[in-house]
Length: 337
Image (tube, rainbow, N blue to C red):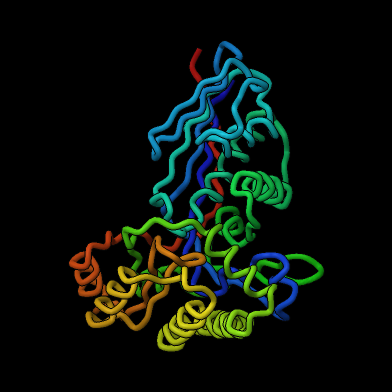
């Protein structure tokens, strides 16, 4: 038997979050999301056991649960996401499934989705099962929806699978993913990422925005359309390596997003935004749906350190994260007899 180690990147979304939610993804013509994989990884390590027990352990959350068999697992516990994935892709024997995520909990960096991709891939490889990227995405999204009990978008899964900077286009014929031809190192030198210190739940913010949009609230409908316009602008700016235009698109996305729900921003976020701009950041936005978590900024390389220092003085935690070209990686490690 072999040990399986699967690792997947998390992501920063630069524009177009919430547009990946059905049915907004279909109702807004030309809807897309622009994001980039980052090297804060989620990992799943699967080790076979000599008995039939299922041992689930989350290193970043410091939680562990052990069950005598797959059928005995609780699906509503704190590790219910992993338990549900094990139920869907049963290992055929006892295992230790040990997960970890470098992105802070509630960061808005798609950590749970990346973790689901890594764990699902590890379980499939352990079974010797060939599973396509599309089938793995559908499975993990379905399970995550069961856990969150609110609609989930699709943007988080693609960077975890593919890596790179992506434009994810939505339409009636499905989702189309294009890699944006931007130098990843160029982007990384101009990006600052911090954790605001305020954890958030994308489900709460996204559900509020979705409901307002479907109810036809004018501010929400117009705000979503401005977010969509800013996203198209961001895609073109990155392809052209135009920092000033990308920063303008980031600012437009953020200001438009704040009109969607009062849950998007708060006093701590606005204070950190203002401090970063005084230090030389061109613009910034909260990652994911908003409400807390991480903030991504764009700045000229010579100003990055000043921006980081200003954020630290405001109580934010600067994350040493850079865009990454590679997506999901799986390693098979022989276990010595």
